[in-house]
Length: 129
View 1 (cartoon, one colour):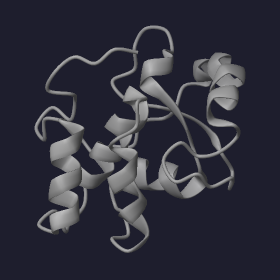
View 2 (cartoon, helix red, strand yellow; view 1 turned 45 degrees about the horizontal axis):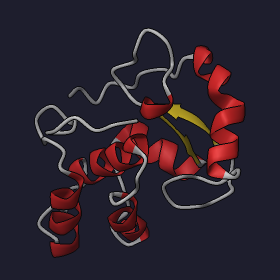
View 3 (spheres, helix red, strand yellow; view 1 turned 90 degrees about the horizontal axis):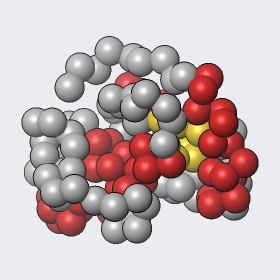
């Protein structure tokens, strides 16, 4: 998957109310309230979907876009990969796959739990909404 920054679509705003209700105004990855906004995972479906969109804070959006996470701050991702929400699980796994320190045992365990293919960066097995 290319690390080229993809611009988030304005159309994802149509999910705003539902996402805010689901997330209670918090980042669905780390639970921060810092500049929380919708974040849509690539590849973008024709119409925005809840199963491909999550609420993310400024730090998590930056990490998702740049593929560079802080290993100390990123420990919350080991819990996020267990989320019942596919978008949260997939986002957490993608962040971990981009980490330069994948040999750390906690990252290896988290990636195994996420069941995401490192090549396609999608779930190995289909998941429900």
